[in-house]
Image 1 (cartoon, rainbow, N blue to C red):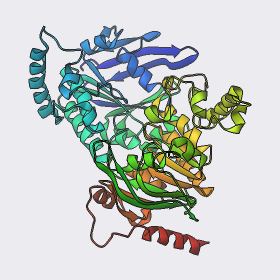
Image 2: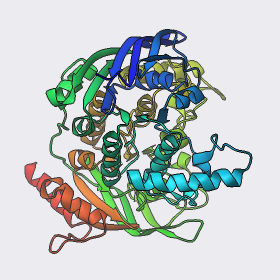
Image 3: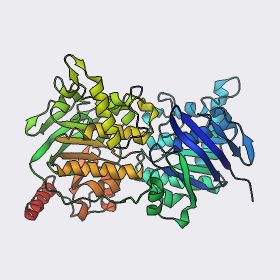
Length: 528
């Protein structure tokens, strides 16, 4: 038998008092797709960062193809044939695809010669692995799916035969994720070894050969994927049985909280991003907004959350909101009872170099409970943060850690805790479980449903169609800045929603906006 592609023996790593990895050993066979799963903060990304040279282990040994390897930095990892695609891409936004790929690996005395050589190799790699990207496109003009392909091409350009992908589908649409998995299968057929870190058990079951499970910094199991099941893996991850569906009672919608009429947004380039959007959300219901990323959902949340200007009419509890100028800011929105979980937690939901207790209070730091005369009561803020950290099981449970020291899923839970615990009249939620583990997904879904059952109105945006189907009481589908139609979850399926998301209105099934809402309200009235 050939030597393992990767062997990690007794790897340990601590950050101050936090033990991220504890005596971890793992073997990855060559030419396979090996999944690594675990809760947020279980130590998965830390372990792979050690393998890629971002961190140095406190103890342990790394072997690549049977040979002991010292990997003090990422350059050493690249020389060992290891490439890594991070959850948050490492690309220069105003550089072209070609410039990003050769950056740090230019070679030779003249950049023009290096670029021409890279262009030829890039075309060969693109054709071989179906990674078709325009080499002259700027990164800032590419969608996240294309940016991810650029990251994979960067690794292949550097001759990686071991590829690590950290939460690769967290920002992808279902069709982009399917294409990524075809690419990974192609890499496997070419003899490449792939390590896939993900929280999505369906992906693990569909694409991996072997899966390792981590919990609280330790390796708890490694099994052949064909010999296990999603419920078994979920239990191994969190140490208890996990409900893999949303358990909720039928909605009992009340009066309208949010009403949007003919909302329009034009961006700085003169492109109309929202084209006359009209919708409403009632007390005690969740309206799910489905659509391929970039079709206006983000723009809608930003206008409603006070982050960008628009035209039209928006009311909350019967009172009009300012859509531009004075009074249209996020602070005023919060005072009007609007909570907002933004789609991009790092850029819009957190200040990465501030402590967890400061981030938990952001946007609400002028609340009377945190005031001591003209000054903030930092002790009250820290006590409140500690309570939220405990309730939402944010790890590490240390209010003094900066936001960037938490895993992506735990960063998300900080934002979720801050907004949900305020019990807003209207909650705007963008991608609530992006990069979040299966146990935390169950908890977050429970909290959103509990808020609905308290009579709050919730507008949910998610690229996860199964999440939209499971949580929503009504579903509206957006395409090209417009609402294509509304559906009740019990009366539709992913195929029909997918057609609407592509701008294809099927015959005889389109309901006028508002008709589904009226039907739902009428049904709730009959139940009562």
